[in-house]
Each structure stands twice: as structure tokens, then as C-alpha cells.
Amino acid sequence: MDTDTTRPDTAAPIAAVVYNPVNVPVQTLRAAVTLAEREHGWRSSHWFPTSSEDGGGAAARAAIATTPTVVLAAGGDGTVRAVAEQLYPTGIPLALLPSGTGNLLARNLHLTLDDLPRAVETAFTGTPRNVDIAFAEYRTGDGTLHRHAFVVMAGIGLDAHMAANTNQKLKKRIGWAAYADPIARSVFAGKPIRLHYRVDGGHTRALSAHTVIVGNCGTLTANILLLPDAVVDDGLLDVVAFRPKSPIGWAGIGSQLATNRLLARNPTGNRLLGRTLRSRALRYLQASRFEARFDTPQHLQLDGDAMGVATAVRLTVLHKGLVLRLPHSG
Image (cartoon, rainbow, N blue to C red; front, side):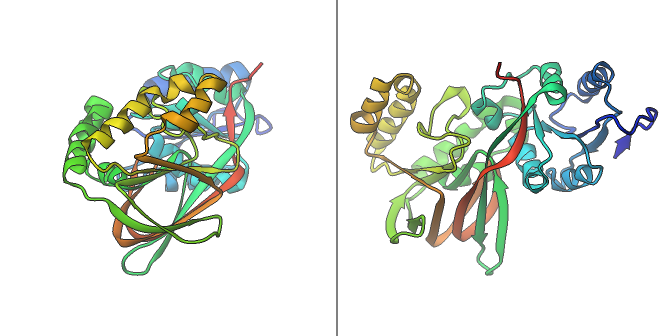
């Protein structure tokens, strides 16, 4: 922890900054935070770096212990996920300082990317907004039960295998293009997974799919709309199963994802999207709870972080359980 205590006004608000020192331009960030402190009369912020051994959870817990007015998360989706997991029970607002490859929560909230000073200004002057936070409870092969939060998407199967097998150094250098090789290997070599699932405590159903994605948000990088009905504060999870039976099926999925954004812009497009143009290779549903068990253990990813291999998973959502600090809407 790095703390400057030269300003004695303990009645003034104070921020805590959790930052990824690899992805974040630290000098630029420090300069922007110092400027905001001076302009708005805040005390000097507490600083907590993440590490290769800790993606942000320990740093977030240390930040919370300082009872800050707001916590700034500077990093990618993994940093945001780890901080949100620790922060949500406290009610302390979380401010996003997008600095990673995907920045999917920031994208879905239509925040400005690649403008660190503006993001810092929002952290100090923005307005609170409650959004949903989701949770994955999953059991590994040794019977151990794990529980972690996510704010964007959980992936099972091909999607999670891709996250687990992407070269992280290459991803840092060339961004999402680094996923091309694991996507190709997974698509052409991978086999569908067999699972038994149920939604909201209903009847158990069988499903065969290459991947299942459960999202709190709907938009991917390149403005690709994967989950057209996903809303970040509706108390629901949106589920899509990829079920292509041939290369033509994969082509149909690609075509639909390319047109989702255009069709979703108007009511007519939405009706077309829902009734006629959705590929049969994609199956959609909504639920507040999605449970699945797998015939064989499957990779699981949360917000791009590989979480290991699971034999069963339960995904739930806490409606408006996370407080964000966002720009004033007016």
C-alpha cells in the first residue's frame, strides 16, 4: 500500500485505487488522481497494486479496510470482477478506469474508453447507479465447492477452453486477435458437451452444445451483440447455447452475431430477430438462476478469467447488488 498522509483534513472524502501495474499507465493515473484530489478537496488516495499471485481480491480487501468514499478499479475485466466480488457487500461505490483488453462492463455501460483523466474525474464527481452482480457456485472433481462473482459473462465449454488456452503475453500485445488460434483449434477439434440444466428450479432438461454463455451484459468487443435481451440491471441472466451441427451452422452463428446490433436498434428489427432471423444453432433463454451438471468435467470462465474445471455449476444474480460511480446522465 502507498499512502500519502500530508493532508490532515480527515472530514474530506478519500478514494482507494486498486490498479493492475502491468496494464495501467501508472504515472498518468497518479497524475490524474492527484489533480482530481486537489480540484475537489479530497484527501490523498490510498493505492493498492494487484499482482501475478492476486488478481485484485486481496488488494480490494485492503482497500475496503481504509473505509474509502469510492474504490477506483484500474485494469481489465478480471480486475473489475475481483474488486466487485469484495466490494458489493459494503455498498461502497466502484468506479471503472478501463485499462485492459476487453473492458466489457465499461463497453456495456457505454463509458468512454482510453480516456483515463475523464474516467478519474467521473470517479470523483459521478453519480451512483446500482447494477446487477452475478455469482457462480461450482464444484470441482475433488468435490470442493467454489463461489465467485462476475459482472459480465460466464462461459462453459469452448468459450472457457479458449480463455484457459490463450497466450496471455500475446493477448497483452495484440489484444483480442490472440484468441484466433484457440478459437480455431476449439472449433475444429472440439466436441459438443453434454449437460443437464434447469432454470429457476424448473424441470431438468438435457442439452448438447459446444459452449454455453450466461451473461449479465450482452455486448462483446468490436460492438458485437451476443445477448440482445441482456440488461445490466434487470435482475435476470441471459443464456445462449451454441449448437452448430456443421460448418454451415458456425457460419449462421457468425452471420447472426454480425446483424444483431443492426436489428436490435428498432422494434421491427427486434421482432425479426426474435422470430425469423435467429440461427437455429443458437438457443436463448432468461433466468434468475441457471444450474447445470456435466457428463464430463468442463472448463469454466468468469469475465475472461479461467476458473478451472467444474463438474456442476449454479449461476445466480443479485438484483442491483453492486453500486457503480458513473457519469451524470443529465
